[in-house]
Length: 340
Image 1 (tube, rainbow, N blue to C red):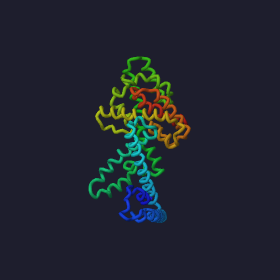
Image 2: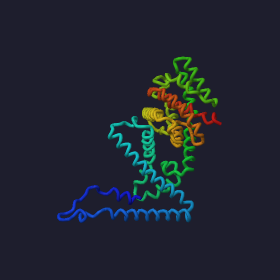
Image 3: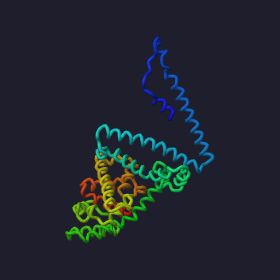
Image 4: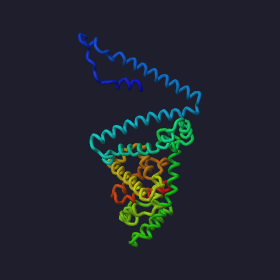
């Protein structure tokens, strides 16, 4: 197929016939080369199929890795083409990423994360003769060094659970940080309200969106704004979003705010698209990004949780990003238990 595409992408200019030659006697026609290229591509496809069957028959343990790698390369190639189309569209129409439809915004976000994850393995591969080390690292540490295109279906479920377990270690830290922060709140009734909410979550109950929304004023510029939170609180929230905590406090806050606002903008684009338009894969990925491990939930449970999330997010302002960040924990910590 690659040869067939290469044949179709040849030079488009036409060379006219020389003096005294008829058009039929001029430059050679490409009509005769097309059947040859098609036959060549067909033969290459048959040989590839035979090679895959040979691997499957003689190397049954290696074949799944080969097949996953092949599909990953194809999927990555398609993704790069789609990203180029989106970038061209943005350039031609003068659009920012926030003005794109939901699927294109999410595609750009995920592709950027994938490329950042691929940087370490790219750096390791730079020295001469380092390819062997790269292969060993990718084989023994696929979760750490491979991007999602090269995970098998079983690895995808396993790795998503592993990443969720890592971030869930910080969920109670976030709730405890919120409870501690209530002591410095100026208004007594708000202090009591937030303390009751934190205690409710710590007891294993699921808070309602209306309860969180009534507290929004606390999270915009006061003690609980992102720029006023304790560093330990900011680090816990950063781990929830899979962000590094090995940065100075200023950069931690800036990076956390940037990622939370990106989710906030995605929420508005998703609401405009409509939850009913999302596929199962898109629905589960949207829940997972916002703090809920959706790998073992039903579609109905995922949709119900995402409706709650959008009901809060799309009512908030950008200045209330701190509430959205903390709600990733408050709304997801006990949701799976409530569904059982």
